[in-house]
Image (cartoon, rainbow, N blue to C red; front, side, top):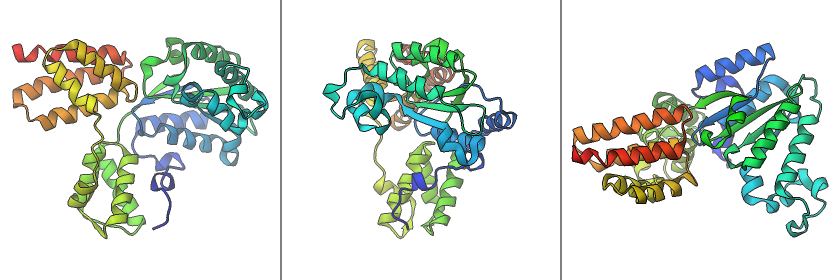
Amino acid sequence: MEEVIWTEKYRPKGFDEIVGHEHIISNLKHLTESNNLPHLVLYGAKNTGKRSTVLALARALYGDWWENNLAQFNASNFFDRGKRYLVSDPRFAKLIGTDDPKKIQKSVISVFKQVINEYAGMAAIDADFRMIFIDGAEALSLDAQHALRRIMEKHSQTCRFILSTTHLSRLIPPLRSRGLNLFFDRAEDEAAASHIRYIAEAEGVSITDDGVLAIVYYARGDLAYAIMTLQIACMQHREITANTIYEIDLDRTPPDVGQLLHASLAGDVKDARKHIDNLLMEESGADIVEQLRRVIEDKGFDSAHAAELAILLADADMNLIHGSNERVQLEAWASQIGTIRER
């Protein structure tokens, strides 16, 4: 086995290598062939293939020039790390003129606007337009989002913007309405299992059917986690079985998830809101719903009680898929399940 990270080694290079998202890929292929790509807003949980899809799109549009015509930025680097990030990225050296964050005279948002304006105004190489990909767009401040909206309008003829987010509701409506919104869901179990078998065969790894199913179960549609689990298992065992996976699996459920369920069932909405706030700082609404589902399954509620909880959780999940406010939906769910025991 090569000493490389398999999540990068097996990152899709083209549309045909992307696992799942058939409808999205079909639409993007059509838009690529017609050279009529609009701005895009990609939303969904972490590790659902948003960034891989953008890179595949760039390769399809620009061929060998894809790296020259695609500018990538992470919003959380700008607005969470701030000036420490600015001095660490060589792309901003000429704008800030120093490697000491304390000596930067401009505000972070000023540098952000200048950088995006500059890249958006550059001419594309052998293409009609270039692309700017902003990952983690939920980290953009309100001022940055309004500035970005104006930049998108100004450069609409020569640049396409792609925003990726795990929290669609944190983007202002003018940004959401200016792009084609595409929802990225978790990978289906069958597709994930097939991909795990493909990588295992490519790497000469011996894995049993129950080992594959165990990885799929614990990955919960997260292909990056599934691939990482497979690679870790390979380092420790010659043959991978379900027991192998049970031994190495790490509990990825934040403590606040169980505490949120407990507070909600007890009817303590104030405490439930506190846990929702904590979770939303790190997790998307879709991720929280999936984690709640797993916790509810493990609690062993009687079938009638579990069914009622599942129905309310499914309603919240559906609303989140359609872009409803995450905090509102989770708080509504928390307040509703506290009444179930009283019926």
